[in-house]
Structures are given as structure tokens and as C-alpha cells.
Length: 270
View 1 (cartoon, rainbow, N blue to C red):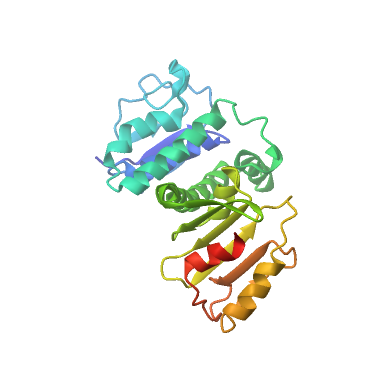
View 2 (view 1 turned 45 degrees about the vertical axis):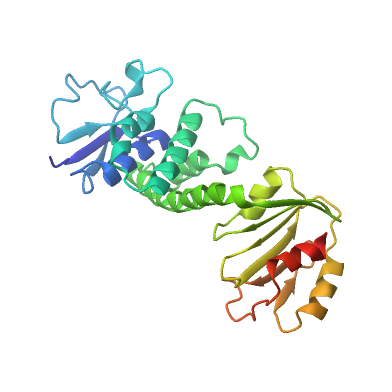
């Protein structure tokens, strides 16, 4: 069945945009559906009667929580309908993370977070005003952000899986953790779990990172000096904060990789 139109209210919220995004990705026949906007109070006598039209977040249909679905939002209602179609387990887990975040936002649980003015809903508000109150512009921006967020959340799923193989140890700089993984944001994840120093390397050894948590008095000068002696052919970048040592990576594709075993890097910071 071809879905010709997805309809939500004027000035769509994150919840409504995400619901439409999920439908266009996972609902068969909806990938090319046009997104249209109506006043939020528009009455529709039988919102689910025409299978070629799907209402989200309005009209009291199956994907509108306002009909009495306490604890749900438009996104969670759509997710329940389409989650069985997501074949890739990693993608399914990433989508579940996004849906949980949208529900928290839609139910007001994130209204008091730090730096609220820099969050996605506030960006949408700014885009709506910037474009002369253009609901389509907000939705298009939302689709792009959600596409990018899906990539990031897939990375987080990989990181959470890899985290089980971490090495925890006490270093001269405080609690430390080391991990070999292709995932990104390992340092932030480590800090969030109470570590002061994070070491990680990708499996082929072309990227290595030793990073101390901001706000500490960590000074990696001694480690940098040791690397200069033991690993002189490698291109190690020592950040001016003295808390970061990097070898390789996308920002320095011509860097000469380190030849030191990962276990030796761990020994240097103990």
C-alpha cells in the first residue's frame, strides 16, 4: 500500500518529526510520502480510514497519543508498529535509543537539562523563526539531524558492546580504562563512568589516544617524553593542555603510526 501523505500539525515538534521520519524509513510504501501540516485542532472524523494517509501527533488516530495513550508519544506509537521491520540488530538498538530520548523530551523530562537553549528542540524553534515560520523547513532539518543521529547512536551501540572488553587499572593519574575498538567517543564514555584517564586504539593500530579528563591536574608530559624515546618514528601529537596524546586518525592521515604494543602504552601511564 502506497502512503501518499503523512500529516502532522503546523510547527511540528521533535516527536512529530521523528514519527514521520520512522514511517518514511520503515513503513512499506511510505518512503516517498509527502509531509503536510494542518492546525493542531483540526477535526478528522476517521483518521485511520484511508490507508494512504497517516496522521501523526494529531487527529486522535493510531499515532496520536492525545487520544489517551499515557506514557506514549507519536514516536513511540510508530516505533511499536515498525520495530519488527528493522532487521539489523545494531540499527534496531540505535533506533530504540533515539525513541527513548524523544519520549523523554516530549514528556518534559529534559526541560531542565543544562544548556537547554542549545538542544535540538530549541534549534527547531530557531529554524521555524529563521525561515518565516516554515514547518517544512523544520521537518527537513529534523530529518537530516535524525539521519546523522542514527549514525552516532549506532556507534554508541558498538561502544557499549566493546566496553565489556575494557581494561580497568589504577594509574599514576587516577582511575584509568583502556579499550581497543572502532567506536568513537570512548573518552567521554569513560569519563561518564568515573575514569580520569582513557586510552584507546582502533584494532589495526592506526589510531591511538591517551586522554585525561578536563578539570583534573593530569599532566602527560612524562608520558610524552617516554614516547619520544621509545617510539621516535611515530607522529605523536601532544596537546597544549598536556592532557591529550594522539597518534594517527582522520585529522592527521599522513601521521606515522605507532609501533608500540597497546599494553606498553598502558604500562607508560601506570
